[in-house]
Length: 125
Image 1 (spheres, rainbow, N blue to C red):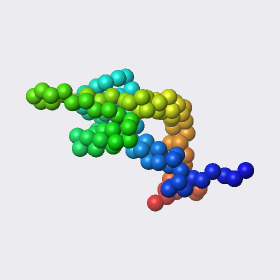
Image 2 (image 1 turned 30 degrees about the horizontal axis):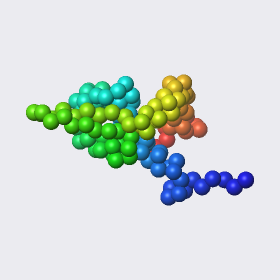
Image 3 (image 1 turned 180 degrees about the vertical axis):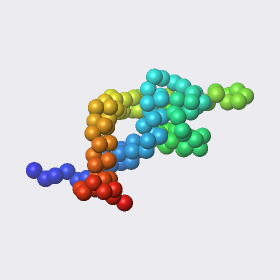
Image 4 (image 1 turned 45 degrees about the horizontal axis):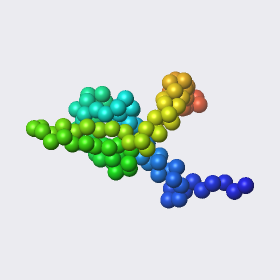
């Protein structure tokens, strides 16, 4: 059996990883998991995200077909965001990743600390 192609240009998996490997994308998707919310509410839910980064992330997710945007004309305009049906299909996968992180991140952290100390116990630069 021939191994599957995992090259950057040919593998759809790598293209999806490109979308989701951005921490802000994952956090925006989590923020939208509960339904339609306004831009300002997304910003409140995601600690540390700048207005510029949130706008860029939402635009990219909209471009990728994962988020829909609805503008209600008013002063100021009301902008609501919702996961699309395609975006909603990511939630179970992301929940599994979140569970894995909850169960295993302490081991990852220990491995990093051990690696950073080096084999002889001295700090690695």
